[in-house]
Amino acid sequence: MHSFKEIVALFEDYISKEGLFDRSPENLYEPCRYIMSLAAKRVRPALCLMGSEVFGDVNEDSFHSAAAIELFHNFTLIHDDIMDEAPLRRGNATVHTKYGLTAGILSGDIMLIRAYEELAKVSKHQADVLHLFNTTAREVCEGQQLDMDFEKRNDVSVEEYINMIALKTSVLLACSLKMGALLSSADKTDADQLYAFGKNLGLAFQLQDDYLDAFGDANKVGKQVGGDIKANKKTFLLIKAIELTKDNPERIGQLLKSDADTKVEEMLDVYKEAGVDALCRTLIHEYSEKAFKSLAAINVEKERTAPLYGLATYLLQRDK
Amino acid sequence: MHSFKEIVALFEDYISKEGLFDRSPENLYEPCRYIMSLAAKRVRPALCLMGSEVFGDVNEDSFHSAAAIELFHNFTLIHDDIMDEAPLRRGNATVHTKYGLTAGILSGDIMLIRAYEELAKVSKHQADVLHLFNTTAREVCEGQQLDMDFEKRNDVSVEEYINMIALKTSVLLACSLKMGALLSSADKTDADQLYAFGKNLGLAFQLQDDYLDAFGDANKVGKQVGGDIKANKKTFLLIKAIELTKDNPERIGQLLKSDADTKVEEMLDVYKEAGVDALCRTLIHEYSEKAFKSLAAINVEKERTAPLYGLATYLLQRDK
Image (tube, chains in turn yellow, green):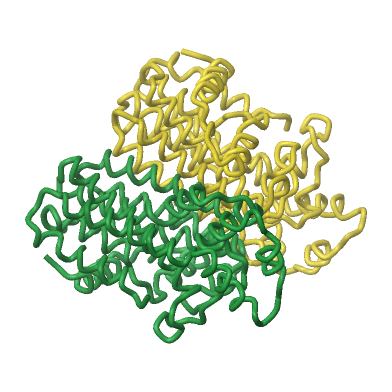
C-alpha cells in the first residue's frame, strides 16, 4: 500500500522512463512534452493506481492505464483551452498560445491516440477497460459541449448543471478508480462502488470549488475570490439563486449586467439572502456522504481503502 | 464476392442502420451527422471490406472496422480543414465554417472516440486490429504535421515528400486493406502483401494527382488545372524541378513570387524543360507496378483479388 504522494512519485517515474513523446516530427511532439511537463497534481492516474491497490498490487497494466488516463486528461486540457480561449494553464502559456492553433489541435489529437496506445498494452481485462474508457471519453466530450451550450443559456436547471459537471469532471475520476479496480480483478459490485465513490467525490469537490470561489478565504484558497461572479459563470450558486428569485428577477438581472466594484459583494448578499450558500453546503455534504458510504461498502479490509479515505478527506476539507 | 459499388452500398446500409450519432447533446452530434452525410466515395471502408473478401466473407467485425476507419478519416478531415482554413469540403461548407471552431474541434474529437467504440466491438483478432489502427492513426497525424512543416520550408527533398504523402494518405489505405485481411484470418505474409499493395497504390494515386493537376485535361479531370502551381503547393513536380535547376534557381524563384496570368503556363514550361513530367510518370508507373506485384503475390486464387485489381486499374487510369 502506498500513500497518494508515493503513488504520484511512482507514476512520474514510470512516464519519465516510458519517454511518451520521444519521437519526431518535433513540431508535433514538443507541445506534448511541454504540457506533460507542467507541474500537475496527477490526481487521476494516482486514483487509478490507488484503485488497483484496494484489491491487490499495482502492476504493469495499472501503469499503462494510469498513463492513458493522464494523456486523455491532458488532451482535453489542450483542446478545452482553445475553446475557452484561455491564455494560461497551471501558470504557464497554454499550448495553442505558445505553439499556435494548428499545434494545439494536432498535439491534442496525438495525445488521445497515444492514450489508446497505452491501453493497447493492457494484457488482462482489456475489453472491460476499453469499454469503460470509451464510454467515459465520450461523456467528457458531451460534458464539455454542455458547458459551452450553457454559456449561452439563462434557463439552466440545477439538475442540468449537476449532470454537466458529472460528465465534464466526475466520470473521469470515477473511471480512473474503477479501471484500477478492474485491473486488480475486483468483482463488479466492488468496482461499481469505487466508481460511485469517485463520481460523488467529484461532484462534492466541484460544488466545493463553486462555493469557495464565492465564500472562501482568499488567503487560504490561494486566489482572489469572486472570479466566477465577475465572469457571470453559471455555478450552482448562481443557477439556484436565479431559480429561487424567479418571481423577482430584476436584482440578479441587473447585477449580471454590472461592472461595478461592488458587484461581488452585492451578489454575495443575494446568495446569502436566498440561502444558496447553505443549500450548497448541504449538497456538498450529501455527495460527500454518498462517496464515503460507497467506499465503506466495498468488501475489503478497512486498511485497504484507508489511503483513498485520507485523500478524499483532504480534498474535501480545503478551508471552508 | 462483391464489386466496389456493391460493397459501398452494403457499407452505407450498415452505417445508416447503426445510427452512429443518434445522441445528444445536439450541438455535439449534429456536425458529426453533417460531415458523414456529405457525398463521399467511401474508398477506405470499401477497401477494408474488400480486404476481408480476399480471404473470406465480410462479417460483423469487418463492418465495425470499416466504420472505425471512415470515422477516423472524417475526424482528420474536420481537423485538417480547420488547420488549412478550408471553406469547402466536397462542395459544401466545412464543419468549422458551418458550426464554428469549437464544434469543429469537439465533433472531430468525438468522431475519433466513436471510431474506437466501433473497434471495441471487434470480437476476433482485436489486439492485432487495435495495434494496426493505433500505429496508422499516429502516422497520419505525423504526416499532417510534416505537411504543415513543409509549407514553411524551401528545401524539402523528394524523399521527404514521398515519406510525407505515405504517412498522410497511403498508410490509411494500406491499413484499411490489411485490417480487412486480418479479420478474415489471413496469414501475416498475405496481410502484409495487401498492406504493400495499398501503400504503393496510394503513392501512385497521390503522384498522379500531382501530375493531373498540372498536365491533366481540364474537361476530363473535372477541375481547372494549375491550382497547385498557383498556390505554390510543394508537389513532386515542384520539388523535383527545384532540385534539378538548383544551379540556376532564379527562374523558378521568380515564378514562385509571380501573380501573372502566365504563371501556370510558364511553370509548365519549366517542368517540361527539366523533364519532371516524365520523371513523375515513371515514378507513378514504378509504384503501380509494385502495387500490382504485391497483389499478384498473395496466396489466393486470382478471382479473389480481381475486384481490387479492377478498382486499382480504374483509379490509376483516370485520364492522363
